[in-house]
Length: 244
Image 1 (cartoon, rainbow, N blue to C red):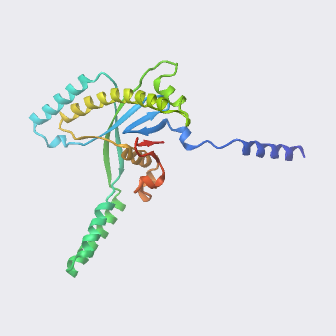
Image 2 (image 1 turned 90 degrees about the vertical axis):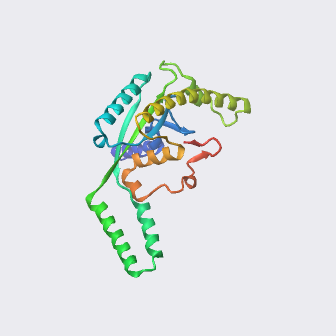
Image 3 (image 1 turned 30 degrees about the horizontal axis):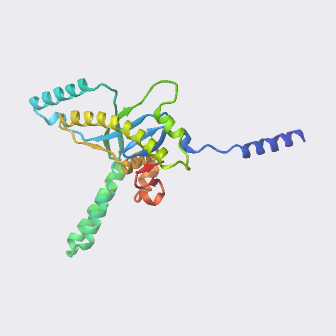
């Protein structure tokens, strides 16, 4: 009897304790205007960087790239993080375009060859498990490293749905001030990498959402793609491009 009562009490206690959301385990508070805002108040911008085939360059070109990269590193007064992400090659868009081309093909023989080629490529990618690499540079900006609340932590703490215009404007100005300092670092990194012959693209809010979705859900992302992010109710404020 006592054991049964103890079991019931445990069940009631479990029902009273709400399960933690997945978001509570993430360090990301929100994404605003191409900027990842962390729960500790830090800001991050993510740059997608192209690659070059170093071995195909002449010795003179290789030395130029090395010296340019060395000069880039010497100009940095802040840390950066370089991430290499491997993922399965996605050629769905390429295959879709081929199917459309095949359907419009009037020559029956060419149409048959097109669909056979589509089938061959699809099986090749599936069974060969072909991977591609993406390169990212993460640029950080942490306002303060003190134990007390920094400006951005206060920003979140003071948020209130009933805020008046002046309070909202004040928080907006605080964000703009921090974003400006982060942008200066981003420009430094972009210029340095472009001098090495690399193409650099700063990810916007939608690209950031897709990147984190694909990173945290690698298997699901292969079959369930984010085609229309607006329909998922992820973007809360279109004007400010705020994502939570």
